[in-house]
Length: 338
Image (cartoon, rainbow, N blue to C red; front, side):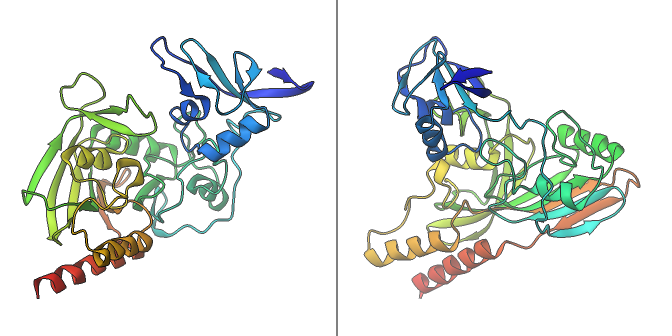
């Protein structure tokens, strides 16, 4: 607990700059460490005197230096274990006594984090279901795995402790099949292949992941892919994960030189391929508006049922925005050939 302006403030985050830290604005420094943080939220915290460096309030323009202790404080205690049940609709495509299959919409955060204490899938699950199991102290009932906020598609939820334990082991050992569909920039050379290379937090921006092909950092990762359809300047691919690293598909295709279409964090929100004609640029901008997020969908999930051992297979149709995006590129590609 800290004291500022004679009021009680509670510490929510605490970071110490490493010995090699080059001077960096405190708002940028904090964004590198805090999931789901936005620069706007951090700057508001600074304006209100909630960002401290070495126990003193600073402006968002303050340059963090080696050894600085940076903390965020608020007038209320940290919401570590408080989960607010909320009546948010969930698209459940299958349910039995042991599992749920949820088709998540793009834009929905899976679990609470900094700046997203509510409105998440976990808040919705807490409202619609009683006594979902927790595998850790993180208070994420039912959650066995996650997909990114702006990725749509299938998730499996555990309804009891046994299912949680068994499914968690399946994900840990990769004893299941997960397929994704993505639209990537460029025309891939091969019809199928794999991308291999360790994945770890970027050394420049800790909110994204980088590939370290020499294995000097990060964890081993492998993504298999095959081309589903070619549209000239973009390609639709199916991806099968052999490992399950954060942002794996997004980081691997960026490393390959083919970022996911409209993936702002990995450089896919720029016009990377095509012509310089104004009409083409307008076409791509319209595509960005149709699908205002990375073009990635968790299409299918296959695993043995935690209780019956039956093979369960689930598929999810492409989200409407991705389906419209692909149809628009398909039409463009056909018209170019005429």
